[in-house]
Image (cartoon, rainbow, N blue to C red; front, side, top):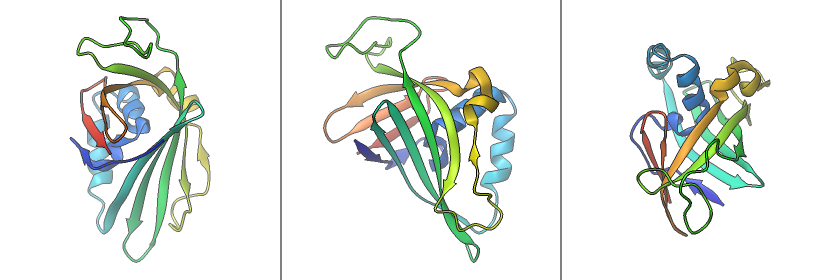
Length: 163
């Protein structure tokens, strides 16, 4: 289904598994890099959403630079089988120590869709190839029903809420 982000314990853009993988690849340096990009003037972050279907999680974040243009940064991740089968819930998904289900993701690509920003090229960034083993991240689903999904980055515990 499709889920729209309403809360994040950090910047909206970090709901994307791309940033989780980037943080793993550049451990200790990623937050310094994020501080530079977060500090760009005249930018607005719009709606963030995730679609889960067909073995893929697609994350979209709208970005606008005042007077220049707009784009939707889109990251596609493959849903993988978890590395280790822990205790399983009723649905067969592995449970973490807190009773949530782990969703193993491999970040495949990132691209600007509907791009109207002149300084952002229309290319598909090969996230998996560039980030290597760091492209594999874990999304911990701590609550899920028909109307609400609460997840966290298992690598650092940051939380995101999607109704």
